Image (cartoon, rainbow, N blue to C red):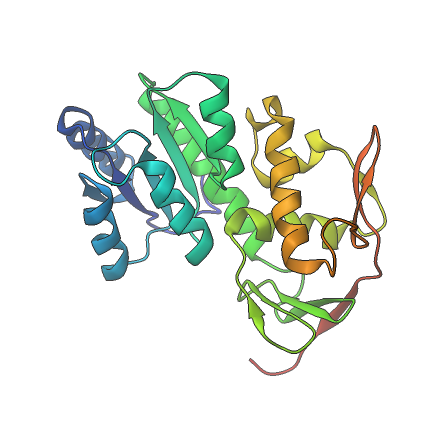
Amino acid sequence: MNDSLPPASKVLLVDDEAALREPLAEYLTRQGFLVTAAANAAEARSRLREDKPHIVLLDIMMPGEDGLSLCRHLVESRDIPVIFLTARGEATDRIVGLEIGADDYVVKPFEPRELVARIRSVLRRAGRAATPAAENEIFEFEGWRLDPLKRRLSDREGAVVAISSVEFRLLMAFLEHPRQVLDRDRLLDMVQGREAHLFDRAVDNQVSRLRRKIEVDSRNPQLIQTVWGGGYMFAADVKRIVQDGT
């Protein structure tokens, strides 16, 4: 079932191998996706300027700018989930992909039906995270404000602080469960879904990134506290405010 997904989810497929890219684009189209294909990172950046896909399928090994570099750009500047398509099966390569903010990865050669299931799973997680409990609900904590509908995080002075899609989902998990210990498995399931639980370092890395953005001193965190042997706890009061207007 994919009734929680957009009516026609837009996919940007980036892979330099035409023998994979073209038949995969056709298969995904038959599965009901609107597919745009790119042969390299430069072409993908051009496609991104023209349209905003709901998800990017991204090969790691490409001539010129590689997929890791393009993924860093996507998670730092855009709110688009990323699934890596990689021939690299080593755990370290998968860890790097998850640590820089990818939502999932699929190792080549892969079963197309599994990829479709992964795409739908990532889109459902992104859709759930984008939908607040109330239409105009705002989260406030320690002078910070998060607007889930707009995915906008503002600091104490009102300046907007850019966060990646993974950082957004991680912060939402903490704000929805304040003063509760969340272990790594639960956080990874909330933020990145199945298979990511194999790599505890991935959530540690994302917590470190988030701390650098919201803590006064990320080396002495007061908001996101480490619970040794247990995981992490958001140690601040969280206020939910339903706003009138837009």
